[in-house]
Length: 277
Image 1 (cartoon, rainbow, N blue to C red):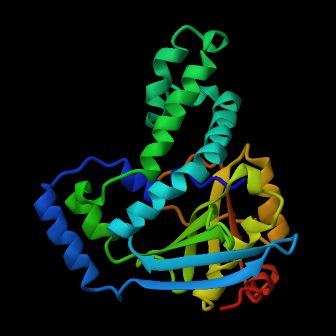
Image 2: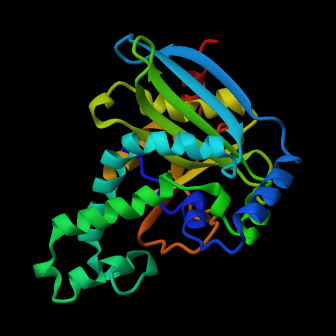
């Protein structure tokens, strides 16, 4: 299962609001005046079992309330995937508690030694931290963040069951104004645990080549301990990236960066070609 915590979106959501709600709304409106109107689309495909799946997507910025609404809905799919991945990392690298600000909330649990940690309580803290990355109010974002990221495009893709409309998984992508042309970051990717092994993750990942076929570099990062996701990414054609694009400081011994070059492989493009309008 994919994990993209502490992506640029996650870093932004942790920043402290610095402006009033009214002033932020003005800044958000101004940022949209430079963007195309929100784009929406829909297509159909089938999973490995031949079951019909609907993909829906829209392109906007994460300042848009519609993106915040979509992320809030996605949390129920992301929670059972992301929390175990982060807990696995924390148990493998407990030294991050007390050395990295991101894990400050865990310090009381670790104060008497790793052998005495209440891991159930730690999981509650982790869940609340991750929830903050998905459930947020863009009108509380600070002025500096709005100006810095207001020109960046964000695409949200959802996979739903054709018959019931149930959410099966989602992916979000970002193309920043500061990135090289046609470079896209995978911000988040998740499939509901009970819907795995249907090929939905690959379908969601491939959708970027339907939405933005001009993409020449697709990149992401995940925890070094996330072996399941790493195996999937490599099977899809991603390769280790020695010189990654980093929107903020990462400890490279805790993260693995991967990139997909469509000039070198066509695995995802072939899957994208199965997405029918």
